[in-house]
Image 1 (spheres, rainbow over the protein chains, first blue to last red):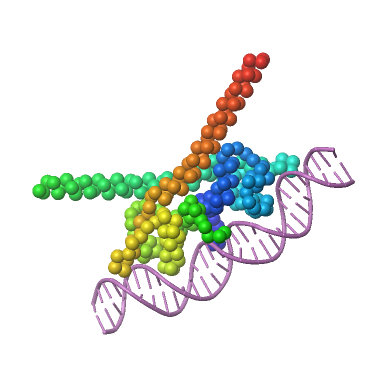
Image 2: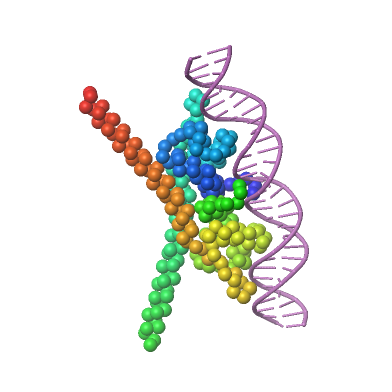
Length: 115
Length: 115
DNA sequence: GCGTTACTAAAGCATATGCTTAACCAATCA
DNA sequence: TGATTGGTTAAGCATATGCTTTAGTAACGC
């Protein structure tokens, strides 16, 4: 719990909250200001800002302020990072099942030869 | 924070911890007992069990006890669920960029006609 | 300038999380 | 049967998280 979190920690943590996923779902359809993002959500503006801070520190969202409005947009590269980690695990799992299946086939063949 | 978390909440939350991702990385290579899983980790057995409980409540891991040994294995379907959520968002983002690109093309064409 | 808009900063609070240690139980094994 | 192995339960503790309210500040719009 010593705050030395990896990018992957921060990204999955960011995605673990429904409000933050809703923010991401909104932002993939295009950039938006803080108050635009807050408008459909049932919570105070500071709460939304704190969620945005989490998203930003994970790298999923970037933002810049022009005048008094801060415009937020997603960074798809970070989304891919999380997706890739999961995909690689699933691939390993599938390839293990394949090897297991092949092994079982050889057992069956040997069995056939024996009978 | 009222504990009414969706499967997606629980899955991303489970993946947000490096110890739990290490457990998943181990389990995609095949089933293992609790103490096998704990052995390479630098923490007490109860701590590992608590991580396994989080993984299990998210659906990423299932386990069954035979005699006195509990065998854990991953459930790849739950991995896919998380992957799909991210993938869908990335797809939306890409398709928006495509539409934006096409729009900019039409602007360029109109500009060409005007000159 | 003066009010409004858009955001920010700070504090406080309830609950959640990630560990620990100590004690315990139930299946093996000698 | 008595010791060991493999796992479990419970309690306690420090820190993190997800809000809130209150009180700002800075940029418009008139």
